[in-house]
Length: 492
Ligand code: NAP
Image (tube, rainbow, N blue to C red):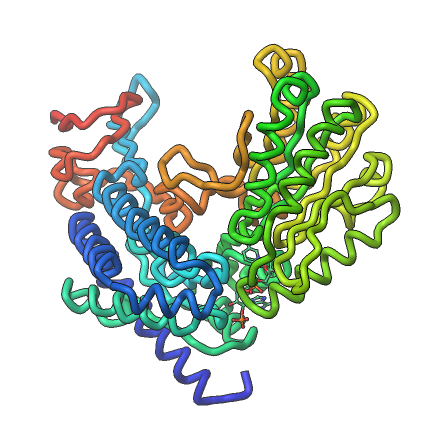
């Protein structure tokens, strides 16, 4: 970075975040929960100014933003409760046993990694930005957080950061537990990811951005995990029987999913796959009508608008691609579009497999089931995969179900990929390039585990052990004791 002032400022922030981590990591689960609940409470009470600021900066509707703020509050409370419950600690205890060949007492649990850099996402100004899922997971794990604010909603991000800092003060958290970094420059991001005190990164955004941060994280002298969620085309497969009986209902549901939030969701259904038939023609007709009735709308920011237009044009220029439905609107921005292409072209052209971030979807027409299987097999890693089929059809088409399971993190039957419930059973992440590590989720309290690592304590006396692993189980958490899940004390 050219500016030495900036380097000094960022280095100081990292030093403080590391110091805060050393204190915060020792705080009880209860104390972490109290802090997160305080952030949730202040965010819930933040009033209209925050929503109005976010609406102005993102072009998202007030209703959507109120909803997203509530979701963020829910996430904070849910992950705080999960923190306190201690399930994420994965406490395992094997007492010494000569018969079992365990010569010394062994106890294992997860511990926090250290300062975490969070990159705010443009399409979720609350839920995946400053006080969003990554920040909440990191706090629950016992880490300090440095947020690199997204330049597209900097004022919103600043207001939320003020809430976190107020909560930190009220809960007497160490200085540096949370830092808000402004500065639209890739150099700032690079500095933070490569700083020696940084121990992990959370990111949601473009493939190019996520992959760059991942590469920097890996090229460091001491590599660190970079959890990047980089988007997906979320293919949807229609089996013929279901389409025959429900063409109209499915077309209506799909049209709503494609245009939801002006298509600016990483779970947007960007590829649909069907087998040529009368029922597919009926589906196409109704889908087209619905799309033609859908209005255009302003997108999140200039960069997203430009890349939507560019990527849509690129897709439409590919061999065999035609337009199925395109509303005639004056303003091109955020205008929905459905394209179509024969599977034989799709299979030969990787450009058609790329995400077009916005209200765009391409229908891939297969000649038969065999070709549908080929299309499914050609898919790159995805956040989700969806199949529409009756119970009997699904049973008959197990190979398709297996192929879809192999490429995605969440497989949906007779539904749409948009709408991500925040709960423990959710998986939001998938094989590369959907995310950089398919073993983890960025939605749901299991996301806490991204910012932890296991440590085993061998031959420690009870007095020396952390509370989580002591004989008396003072935290009353679930632990696997000699193979049995229990909250019991260990009798010695
Ligand atoms: P983005 O361009 O990936 O930017 C997100 C954050 O990452 C920003 O803070 C940005 O830094 C930083 N960043 C991006 N590229 C970087 C690089 N090469 N080096 C260092 N830092 C980098 O995402 P966006 O602005 O939200 O939207 C752009 C595109 O991302 C969209 O058109 C869409 O394709 C995709 N997207 C995907 C998702 C998803 O859910 N997966 C969500 C939103 C967008 P600066 O602050 O310096 O710009």
